[in-house]
Amino acid sequence: MKVVVGLGNPGSKYAGTRHNVGFDVIDYLAKAPGVGLARTQFQSLVAETSEAGDKVLLVKPETYMNLSGRAVRAIVDFYKVPIEDVLIVCDDFNLPLGKLRVRANGSHGGQNGLRNIQEQLGTDAYARLRIGVGQPGPGEAVDFVLSRFKLGEKAAIDDAIAKAAEGVLIWLRRGLDACMNATNAGERPAKKPNPKKTIENEVESTNVDVRKAKSDSP
Image (tube, rainbow, N blue to C red; front, top):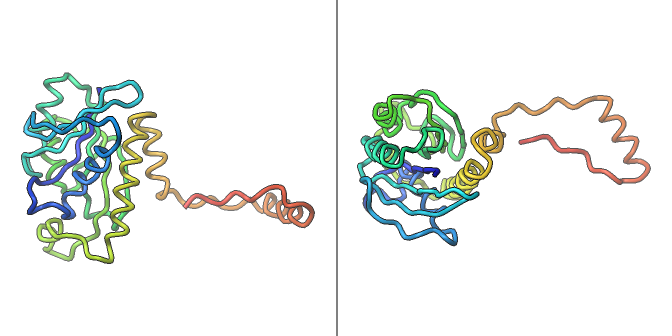
């Protein structure tokens, strides 16, 4: 069994806010064919599906963000799920808008949902996929994460939610390392071109254009 937990706050008051992008990723995934209707259990809304032969739970805790760990702990304890089979998806105001980052462990970085999960599980060694929601001004963090995205930010965050959902699928199908390699690719510095290969390509292009030069990773 694999468990994907998107963090957020329940209720229409918080729908569409920066703090709820974890919920948005779960909703995106739940639209796929074969995903069952969500039901209330473990202080959460839980939908079931399967991927790569494994049963998968798509979870939206209803404990409110700061107590998310209670829901995660309830599921982990009931199903005896190894921590390595749990992925948390959440917002991060320390990342630029739309930036994705996957880590196998680490600090909560001030994200209170992650903070409570670490308190409840007694470890920081769980996978998390964080979505950048933009950065608040000094002393504005609370109001900022509970605000909705501006019109000019919608395209970037919608794209980030879709890419985060793709990252979740890679994690389910191919594991954490593959997910990190694909999702964190933008963090890698561009490779320096090989002068010799560059010259050879230029010579070839003057004859017959049979190859295209490989473009650097973004």
